[in-house]
Every structure is written in structure tokens, then in C-alpha cells.
Length: 152
Length: 148
Image 1 (cartoon, rainbow over the protein chains, first blue to last red):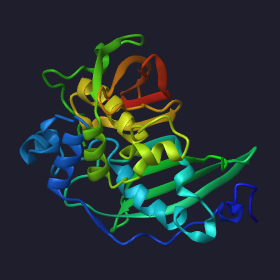
Image 2: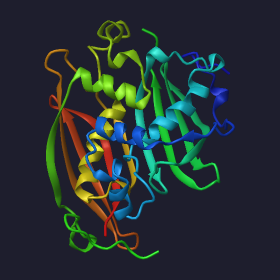
Image 3: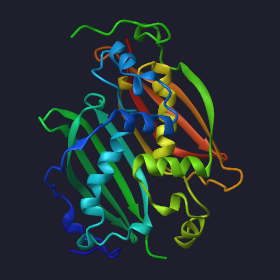
Image 4: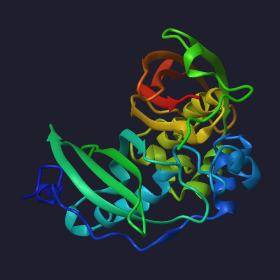
């Protein structure tokens, strides 16, 4: 069923197969940390990370969104979902970390479309990505609410 | 697993009281920062770097990625805790865009207050106040962090 914003509300409740493994690298974490002003050496120096009890350098708290947004594209860019990405703004974001993401992790995301709601032509779409290692260890739960503004 | 030991420069759970303020900071944001964040995060939406595109979809100008602002604000908590891996949850609403002028950029003001303590989990909840040009850009921004 299509809402008046053109979004197919029947996507609500859908779960997608796990994404292909995402390999987390030290240099990528160092670059992301530098970009967001995360100066702690645990992001760039494996010895500093080990001193805090981690096996290797760790990601800043919001890095998981990179993996979640990649997974979200399965839904957001699906023409059948009917989302005009040029009208999408970010409404809400939530992270629950079961443990920090660590360099060397091989992660997969399972995307769930938790809800599709619409108020006066503006749609609110909530996705949830359960990020886990390929061995099945839970790492992060990332919930994103996207607002699709009414066509002007 | 043993409890982490207190380390120099890290606040101890026992010493942190509800109502304690974290040191506030102001973070300048430029267009170049947004381009770097687009590259590092993979979020290449042109509303974050192309002024003409941003205006064509009804925005006042280029706006910062909400996730960039959220990341900057979360650093206040991660830096205070002294262990970025100790942030166990972090949530926010995006209430107003950070509009980034080509010449002058933007200035994001970040403050935080300890709002709750959990004795069993040895965590504290920090409520963040994040504004730009007088407007609240993050709403209900809160991080839960584990302390030694």
C-alpha cells in the first residue's frame, strides 16, 4: 500500500538478509576518528587500545552509522519503496553498543524496517540495524529515523 | 572479567554526582569538514556540500550531516570519560539543521550535565545541550557511559 508521500508502507516489518561481511580496518578507524575530532590514542595506537583492554584500535561511538547506512540502502534506494532521497532528512538516531567496534572485526548488519508512518504528507521511516560479527556476536544496535518531507 | 581500574584523568564512578557539568566546548565547522566527513562516513548526499543542490530542495544553504554534529557532541562525553569505548549508548533527535556558510562556517556549542547514575551498571547518563546560532540543533541528546 502506498502512502500519499509515495512510500510503500507495506515495507514496515520487513527484515533483510545479513549484509556481506564488512571488514573494519585500522586506517579507516583512524581516519574517521580524526574527521570527527576524536583524539584519543585508542583510535589510532593499538598499544593505547590494549592498555584499555581492547584487542586493537576501536571505533568512535558513532562509527557504526557507516555500516548501518550502507545496509539501509537496501531499503532506501529500492525503487519499490518509493523514497525520494532528495527529500530525506535525518530525524532521530540511536546507538546501543554491546561492545566497541574493533579493527579486524568482520561485521554484518541485519536490516529491519521497524515502521513507516505518515503525517500530512511527511513520512517517518524507522530502520534498525543489528550489527554482529560473522560469528554471531552482537556488537551494535543502530536505530535511524528518517523524515521524508512532502514534495514542495 | 574484573572491573576496570581507575586511571589518571578518568572520572571514577564513585566521584561523579548527578548535576555535575562536563566542560563545555565550541567547535567550528567548515565546508571542508563536511567534505571530509562525507568521505570518511560514506554519506555523500549533496545537501552537505553543494549549495545549489541544497537550495533546490528547499534548504537555506549547505547543512552539516546530522551525524557529524552528533559525533562532535558525543566527543564531549568520550573525552570526559577518558575511554571512547565506554560509551554504551547514545541517542538524539535532530531538531534544527547546522547551516554552514561558505565563508564563515558555523560554530557548534556543546555542553553536558550528568542526569542519572546507575549503581549496578556503574554507568552515568549525560544529557547534552547542543546549539548553533542560538538554535537547539540536537534534542534529547543523551549518552550513557561506563565509568571505572
